[in-house]
Length: 86
Image 1 (cartoon, rainbow, N blue to C red):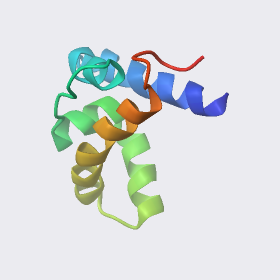
Image 2: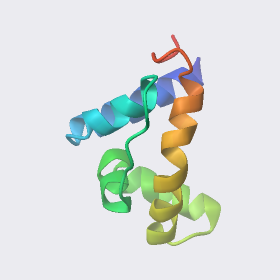
Image 3: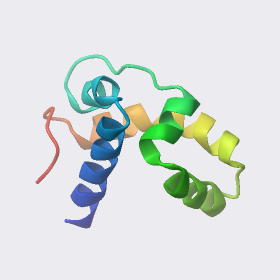
Image 4: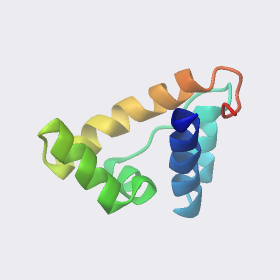
């Protein structure tokens, strides 16, 4: 599905940015490691962050700050079995 592809793309972005441990903790069944707004920007990429910020009517900094609190929980909830959906 498109959602699973988006999630896989998101995870790959964090892995490419050297943040595989962090994103892996969100997908896995253990505790979620925190992510800083700067790390979030690296993992998402500037373009994706700009799009999300614009869609939400926020500055990039505000969007990164909000998402750094939300994204670990969202990814965790989308991967209840500890693996990415197919």
